[in-house]
Length: 284
Image (cartoon, rainbow, N blue to C red):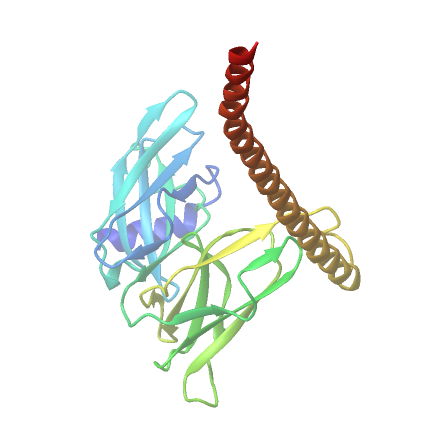
């Protein structure tokens, strides 16, 4: 078929003629079922055509071709995918070519994995400590579900982090695993997902978000023992500040009360003084 000829020609010519284009997702690569995603293929070369291919289990499943738009310094095109279905999940790459030699494709772009979410019931995500940590401290997040997922995945602000972890059955019958983030440097919304081994690009509905707050302090680079001492000093400092504020507020209230009493006494004495002056005037 025509498609077979194109793919064979691609294998023969790819990488020998033109430098690879760049492929990026204009939205996060975790796409909820029924939503749309746009993939932009861009190159410094004035290609006339871009071809987007989707791969599943290592083989090319579909290909899409669009005429390139030219701009100063290069060419590009946007491929709109969706509303997405499970069939749209997979790995995408793009190629550039010219109309006079349609079977001579450029080198393949770096791949982008598109995961479709919302296929299964959402898991839960929790932090083993309070989700407010000092920069540089370790953080462990646990994802768990009553569904027997094969893998759990973690994302931050819609972008997958690290590799998925295999689920383990816990003593209470749920399935879970823990992500050891290490030295936390990014605050934001974290979520987790579950998936099955035979459909690694199809993920569950995301867990409820868990917001991790990072606070920066001088000395955050210190060893753990010194950081504990720093925490104690911070606690003592906060306590002293609170005591000082309470004393200050009490002093201000006492001063205002004394001033009010003095004004009240002064206003009470004034009529008496005036009456005394009038009495003296009558006898003089």
